Image (cartoon, rainbow, N blue to C red; front, side, top):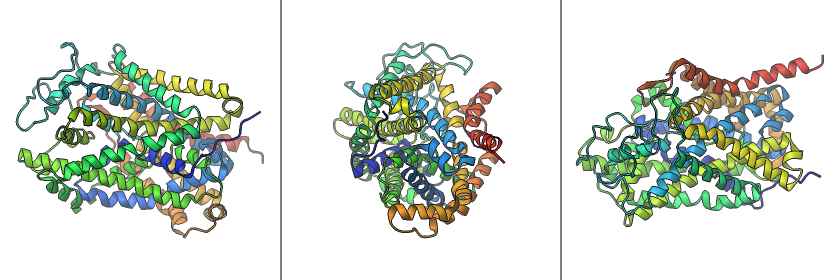
Length: 555
């Protein structure tokens, strides 16, 4: 006998779960970096445009689809629009790739968390070491953790290695941050290329296993355990972020950074890269097109006001990104004043910008070891909340396809979920070898890239706006929430969002640069072939499924 489908045990479970999956590393680290890279306040204009035209409408679309069909991503699209039901399969493939490498980022966060328990923080001065053998090459930059986020094209992972060996602890590097990056080479021991994976990093393999065990123990009871976990994992990071913000704005020169953050450089708006970064950032931070929102919405009551929830979650999501920007730029203003340089020159414009700024503030707080621990706990919680909801989404989609396996009995579900988590762990092990960073970049740059997300989003809008029918879907929404939304959403689904997404895809193709590591190592042709294989494995699902349906249909 099949067990009944899970439902949220409380109203706030759904809101916190959506906030947990949407508010992640991309909001707190990647958004400030993109603002800094693209001229401060100038980035906010295209970002808000993409949020309004594409982000919020597609967010609402996915949640409403799940709430209406009571199914995960794969089966929901099969019931709504069979011809383009490959959308659900593409989403499942993308979320699987995301799970495999996102857990590795959490493993790095756990490693640095354990380093924070030392009597003196390793990055506090130039005399600390991580007690590694001196012959081990390669290093893990603190900033690496920020380079990915559902991780979400461009979520490139950069390790700023160039010039590290020559760096010294000077007055312009009071944190000895460069020195710590050199000492952190103990983590990766990276090889010279993807053709040499080297041995397994057992320390990272251990913390990676710990991350997956935590994920499994939280998710195996379904919505009940996951929803309750979100009360902590989705709220604690805000406490830490507010502490860093308050400390940042009280530092000398903080307003110099904040002014740079909120003052737009209009000339930047003419650069295609600004619009590409804005589009991909919105899709990553809102967790669109990976099936998570459809699955989370499927656990709602049929008459839940999902439009109201969408507005709340969108406000929290973008508000968190903007709040994190104030915290980062306040610290950067202080660093610029301290070093006597301009805002443009204060730090490298890499995705790990925040991993320069936040540790700076941590060292200025009393009992810095405690705050460092809380800092990396915040990183872990931001990541684990995303990992939990992504795992739940994949399990939901598979549970709809194989109900006897996932809802046929308690122990069947436990065993199936354990097998799934272990499979992701095995794939992740390839990324904690000495050459694993090269593999992780392939998954991040190609497998879960902005290109695949934008492609899937465009087809979602076409499926509802033109095949299922925008007015027909409005009838569904009216039946669920009790009133008919204004024309804004259907205009976005039918016209504006597909046009904008397609334009960003074209910009991505025009501005495409082959993946490199640290801007110095060029992947071999077969490495790029593997990467494009990962990307096409999700992209091709939509046309292949359509061809299959047409060939199978009668008449």
